Image (tube, rainbow, N blue to C red):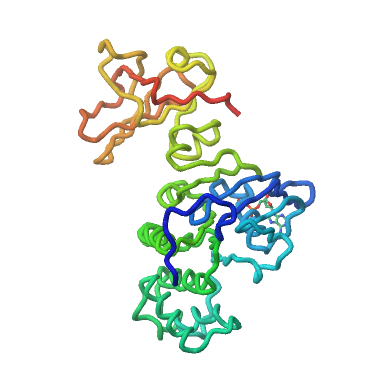
Length: 351
Ligand code: ADP
């Protein structure tokens, strides 16, 4: 396998560059994907994130050629692929179910994807060995699929998809069947595989932690539309809508009239704000830094952090997370809240 540079060019003609233009798909009266225009740089790891039913799989299916769009165009490497069947597109898909062949060995599954591509047996063998190495299963070529763990099967499915050297690998919640620990280690591994190959990965998930830990770009979808896209850090620190603020990371979305809203309005002129739990300091109520006061409704000690629910004249308690090495405040204790203008995001209004 050729190893391409990690920092891929932004050019739309680079092999793995993906452009979606006004893409739409309806089922009956409902738009599953509604006027989506986006582009992904070649070699990027893109997570499509959103709640169940927001159109993530439909969007992925359209890129892969499994779902015909009603409107719009899809270009990969600068070329329209919208009229091509899946096997002619420079894409490969890893399905949630993996769809491995149980009667074939690990190597047999990987080599299957290379059939009909005019490769000699020796070439197929060499490339299969390379792929087994890439997914860290060099000793497992002869094993039957039934003799592999869930995580190992996952790697075989990825190796098989990469065997055809796709410019774009599409992954539909591929880790959802794994337990939490295995998921975490596979997330790191997938990221490493993506960086080693330089293939564009488009990864569908409803898990914000998964998206943040792996992706260079996150696309947040809601009801068939793109709500916001950008780097994980951009989206986390500058959410543009209340939905995004609440979906990516925990955020207190504050609106309406209250003492806290008055403080926020002075700091950041807006009518609605996102306040991250870790961006609120707790001090004694008499502390000159205190801008507004509240009462600890519940303190939960997690070791590294303490999570507080603080009643502060809002319909819901304000969630505050502090480092575990700060003095822990007790339930019922009065506290002063300190907010920092630099770390508050004004939002266009609750929806
Ligand atoms: P997600 O992957 O975000 O969970 P989907 O893309 O699967 O969402 O679905 C988006 C919307 O389109 C949902 O309301 C879903 O019920 C609908 N939908 C998806 N596929 C079909 C289909 N084949 N027929 C009818 N409705 C569909």
